[in-house]
Image (tube, rainbow, N blue to C red):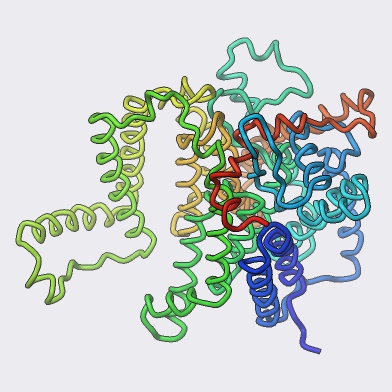
Length: 572
């Protein structure tokens, strides 16, 4: 029997099962239900077949570590409220009702309302298998399946963390549970009277209205349906080849669309890095390696699945929401600002590519350029190239320029766009900078030196810079969710920094890291404390539920079934 990489194989199955159930259970069998389901199953078989043997160094004395890790994961999920076995945060009000609708209603879920039929348009991937079980064996069996499904996902996450270190260790799991920005420090700095108002069980991540990076524990306790898949897919893609990246991300869209948006630029860097390695190994050109590695059966199927999901989510009210209607109109000032922002963004991309490739190439033009390109365009290109050439010769200058460019963009953004929505109307550049310093400043300081030439790390930092100023819907959901993959990359960099600090026996650095981690741990600790504080009021049989009407009336969870492309053409 051929040996395979069982950790990766189980991860593939875990990621693709929800997509298979959704495509087969929600779409017309003769259009996409049967053919696309079979295509995904074939992809899964091909992906597993290609796996090479790989494993984590395991010895018998590591058994106690595995047992303790499992106990920690069981407790983590228990206190999160998943499955309803402990007190639940307010977000579970909506998630419990969505799950119950998935169990009680025929698929696809459509309900008549006063404004016409509304179809569910939400990231339901995590619930697909538990809802199927709940439909067959009852709602309580479904809630139990949720708990187990979360445990399986977190075991895989922990497995990939151990594989990265090639040994079974407990401390990265403990760090994952208690890893966070220094929210309590932000609370004290931004809220001058905050010290007297601090209470056990408070949610410190709300210290600066309009901005929020959530700790991993907060993500699990509040948006578990997105978090588990976002973490797992990020860890998997970091060691994945190009041939199945699109399919894996398509499956992620069903459970965590906003995190997949944040993962997209990081995935492009992974694809670039993989293509470059293939080109060097085979002695071929970069673009040839790129096309041969990306245009695969799995990625084509993944693209089709992405289109299907885009049709479902395209009519979601949160995407269409624009906040203040006056800001939705394009004025001449806004058009100019968009053009300036485009030039700024293009400049930043060019500079970044120069850093990433670590090469300074002389400007060359081919024969067709010399013959067919007007002289003025060639001169502009030469000037543009010279600027990039000079800047890229000094990395410190480049980073400074990028920072100035970014602050200039923020100034334009704040001056022109103004009010965005209820949650972000008071945002400005100073608050933005303060937020980044408190949340990720120390982590960047600890990791930038050893990762300044890592394209994935640099891209993750850029994602973290961008997320706070992008607004989708009526709140700060994009900032909180799209940043999750970048947070995971930064977390991995911190693991490396901790290991290196202890290996080099740099006591001042070790103390500084431990102090920052201790301050940050207050946030996830308070998530546990809040659950424990409310244990006396919790009754297992009384899981919090929203009204069905609230789900179908909310712009975040439903769409007009008469106009949504998915419900018009693909839904059963």
